[in-house]
Image (cartoon, rainbow, N blue to C red):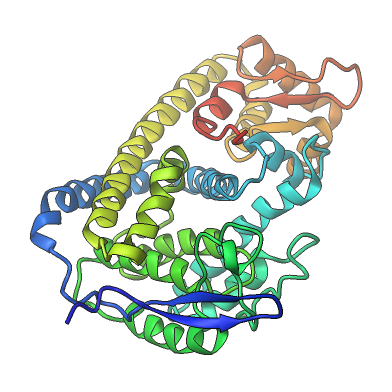
Length: 384
C-alpha cells in the first residue's frame, strides 16, 4: 500500500463543506529513493561542510554571523511579503527611523531574536521539540502584527493557504484535532537518525508546512526549522546557511513542489530541489566570506597608515563590521568616544572611501559602510 499520500477529511463551517488534508507520518512509505538523490546530496554535503569550515576560520566570525542571521531573517520574511531592506533592519535595531512600515521591520527583527533564542536553548542542552518551536514562535510573533495570532500556541481553529475561505483555498491543512496527532508523530521524527541529516531536514520542512500548526508564521518558522535541525545534528555548528535567498529566487517552484508532495507523493522531486538549494546557497556563502574578508583586510591596511589617529578610526571601523549603517549618536553610545573624536574618525573614513553620508543633511547625518553593506545586501531587495 502506498502511504505517501495523505487523506482528506470533510469539514463543515457555517457556510460550506470543504476537504482538509491530513498527511501521513514520516518517513515516507515507500521509502525515499536515496540512490537517486546521492549525486546532489554529495554536492550539498561537501559545499555545506566547506562553508562551515571557512566561516569558523575567519577572525571576525562573530561579526559575520551577526549579519548572516539578519540576512536570512530578512529573506525569509520577504518571502512572506514584508518590504524591509537590510538597511531598514539596521536602522530599526539602532533605534533610528526607517521609511518602511514599523510592523515590517519589527517582524524581521523578531525573526533574528527567535533564531538566537532557539540556537541558545539547544546550545544549553534543550532538545529540538514542539515546546521549543512554541517558544520560538512566541518570539517570532511578538509585537504589534502578530499579537492577535496566538503567539506560542498551536492553532485551535481551521486555517488555509490561498483563497478567501477554506472552500476555495489552494490548500487546507489538517483540522485541529487531527493536527495534534500529526505533531506528535512529527516530533518523534525529529529525533530519528535513519536518514542523512540534509534529507531529514528537507522532509521535516515539508511536513511542518503541511501541518501548518500555527495561525501565522508557519513559513518563517518552517524555514528556520531547517537551520535548527542542521545545527542540532552537528552538520553546521553555527547558522551559516541562508537558504531563503534560493527559495525567494525560486519561490513559485518552491510552492509548487510542496504541493506536489501533498498531491502526488513526489518527495524525490522536492528533495532534489532542496539539496540543490543547499549546494547553491553554500557556494554563495563561500563567495560572500571571501569577498568580505578581502574588503576588511584592504580597508584595515589603509587605516593602519593614518598615524596616531588610527586607534579611534579602528574602533569605529570594527563597529561598522557589526552595524554598517550608523549615526554619530549611535557610535557615541556604543564606543564611549567624544563627538569631536568621532567626527575626526568619520572624516578619515570618508576620505578613504570607506564611509559615505547618505542623508544630505547638516544634522542627524547617517553614514554607511557602502561596500560592506552592498556585499551583504545581494538578493535582499524586497519583492514587488
